[in-house]
Image 1 (spheres, rainbow, N blue to C red):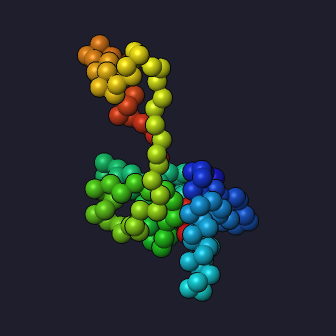
Image 2 (image 1 turned 45 degrees about the horizontal axis):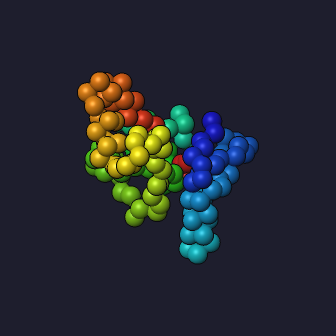
Length: 140
């Protein structure tokens, strides 16, 4: 299974179920390896996900691989969640995403408050709210 999270992580299949890794975080990982002289073999996430807490208290994805002893380190663009922070340590923040939502200009004044008032009007929130709150998610 290939795990892609551009521009941070790209995996490329190798023999034996291993992967080579490229991308921003891979570059940092390779530099750390070079500077500290360790070796590693990379495997992709067992189910293609970062890892979420299941109802039974276990994790899937890369978090599950860490907690089940299948991996010692997971290199990806993780979000630190309260559940994850209870069971794993995280590095400092390496990057922040500055993505924005672009909309048509509502009126000639273009004030942010006008945009927000229209966006969160009761008749629009019922349609927009669920889409907003249910948005988008390498084991070494």
